[in-house]
Length: 244
Image (cartoon, rainbow, N blue to C red; front, side, top):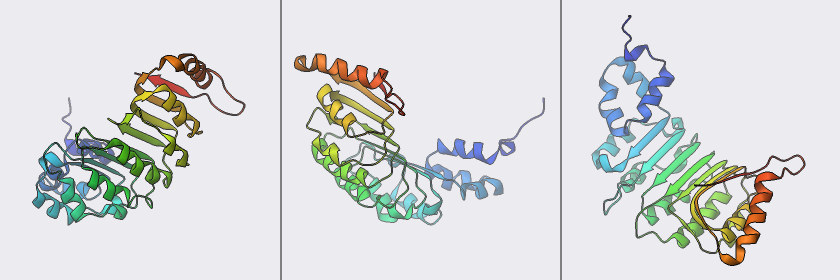
């Protein structure tokens, strides 16, 4: 059987492999394996940043190599330390420099860092946005009040809001005008998921991990769910609602 080298793989497949390697390893190690890897890392379009394993000095090094306008997907993990190292990322990169960014995943960062990011994404061609945090310091009501106005300025197709409490009033969803087709959330009262659906007319897939039924709303919830999963209004596709 003929031996196949890693370098025999298509560039696109190698980029997929690089996706699972942290940015620090990619640019400090893989980059210097050989000339081919050196060239390939210059054209990486997915920047995976796990702040738990990147030092501040790495950011200075990476910022001299990365071309923000080449990045299509940005993944930021803040980690669980008292100080999220995404602060270092924000000190070396400006989010609005990622002019080709189509996908942004933000997880376990501080409120102040998320606010800085949200303030500068309006001009980006984002199609997918994922936000979540398991930090106890998060004020979910406050963060939703920041996230929803930012989303309203985007042309999103997919939205993932993880570890958020949706058992609160969601009247602020009325400002959403972007054509979201896929929404994933965690826990939500049935009265609130009706509010969400009523303000997202383009939604085709709605996934929530747990739906809390109020006794007073059981009959109403059932008829509403049946309407949106079974009936097909003229010229429109039926919605798919999944409760995990």
